[in-house]
Length: 93
Image (tube, rainbow, N blue to C red; front, side, top):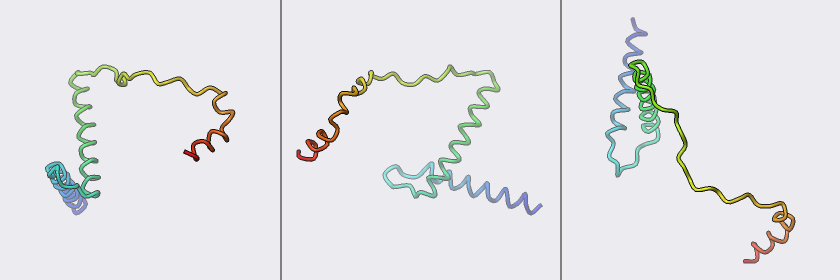
């Protein structure tokens, strides 16, 4: 019985801390310990919500990364041949 009470007490404390972190004013910095507890609870709530959606039949489409502009081509091997000279030029600027 005491282990059950201890578990419920601990869960209650974590829940209250998460609620305090969730309602913390935006303009004030959130203490790190409180931020970690709030993040952990929010992550677990998100997991439970995702499982609930899956169990009731709502499936999300496959995740796709955001589309971004193409990156420039990688530097050619010729570019790195004069690396020592290039480093000296950069240091002299």
